[in-house]
Each structure stands twice: as C-alpha cells, then as structure tokens.
Image (cartoon, rainbow, N blue to C red; front, side, top):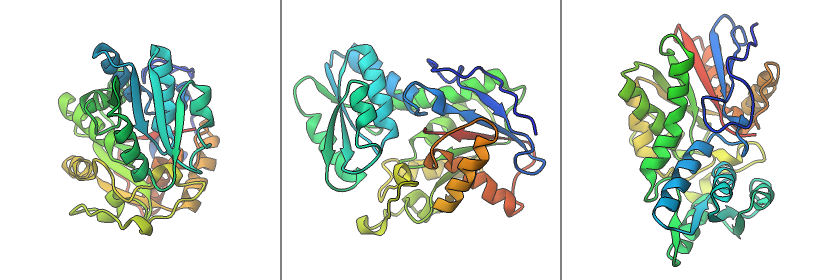
Length: 306
C-alpha cells in the first residue's frame, strides 16, 4: 500500500497546501487519495470558507461576526476572524465539541445555548442584528463566499491530478461543502461523481435520499461523542445538496458510530488523524466497497476535522 504524500503537511493557507495522501490498497485494489483538510490551523476543512467570509465582512466595514456551530465551522471562524482582527462570537450547543475551549483560545467569544445546532443558529442570527455585526452562517449573506472558499479544494485537485477523479466522497451536515464542490466541478466540466456521507438516521439529507427532502423531527436525532458534528434535524442547504449529488450521478449514505471509528483507525495507518466524525467520508467509501459498488478509477476522500 502506497502512503506517499503529494503535498506537504502544514498549517496551510489554502487547500493547495493540505496533503493529498495516496492510500491505494487501503480498500482492496482501489486507488484512494485522502485529501486531509484537517491540517489547517483550526483543524477544520471549513477554514477556507471562513476566511472568505471574514474577508467580505471586513471589506463591508463590519467589526463583529457571529456564527453557529457544531464545532468545525466555529473553530475555523474563530481562527480566521482573529487573524483578520475581527471580533467573533460563536454560538455552540451546551456540551458539544470541547465546550468551546479551542474557539476561546483562538480569540472568539463563545456563547453556549441549551438545545440543538438549530437552536444555536437561531441565537446567532439574533445576535447578528446588533450594530456592526454580520451573520456569518453558511446560509447567510455571504453564502457565495462560503461556496467559493469550499470550492478551493477542487482547484487543488486539478493542480495535483492529471485527470478528474472518478468520485469525491464528502461529509454532509448542512450540505454546504458538497454544493460548493459540485459548483466548481461543473465550472471545470469535470464528470466526477459526488457521494455525500452523514450520520445514519441523524441527518435529513441521508434519511431523505433520493428525495424529496424532509426535515427530521427535532427529537428524532441522537448525538454521541463520535457523530456530534454530523447531526442535524434540518440541513440548512439540504435540498440544494441533494440536487447537487443527484446531478453528479452520486448518492447519499449514512454510517453509524462503529463505522466511523473503524474508518478513523484505518486512516491512522496512512498517517491521517481526523476525529471519528471527520472520518465519515472514508466510512462511506469503505461500506460501499464492501457492497461491491465502487466505480472504477480514482476516489478522493475528504477528511473534515481533527
């Protein structure tokens, strides 16, 4: 099994500098490339999107940005906002992530709320009505910047690969990342298939697939230490994400905590160390390989958090 690193590991400025690890042979004979987006300073693949949103907020004269998070976007936004001198408030459900310790250490204010991620979104939007403050959420006024930031990973793949990959495996929560990747694939004219992978029974993109999109009852989802960043009863961009997956010819899959942990252990053998939730795309690919359903060609797996 090859474990060559195509790009150097670091705390990079963009996806061109996060490593692309050749893990061919990790799953039978298939060519697997691991795009390790956990290597950003924030540990989150959402850092380019956060940086793009912060740049727009600063350009528009705002002094304060507020976002809701399950963990990853808050870490990314805290890192990006502090670097730009922008005050940042992250709204986090009580008991989630590390309780906001990383975000505080990165310079953000952390506002804890009882309830779910969706309750955190509502509170962050309320805070965004204060003078000088802007809503930095993924479906907020800078959604185009969010998509632009997330789309950088496709440009990085274009620079590293001689031809388009057969498929890209992407974590799904709100659906933002997979929409952005789809937009960039279409701009390039790449026929790459997209697979979205989330927490089984805990995300409406997964439970609704192949459609139509339906929110889950708020009390129907279950969070654990392993699936927490993946749990939504309402995906903010769920219908659009499902449309992107369908347009690519792909599918949405759900995996359980055991599969997350198995994928996490598998990734460690090639030098990648995401959280269990950050391993979700690998868990989806591995499950589909076990069913004998993988397309021929190169499969890129996006890691999302450490």
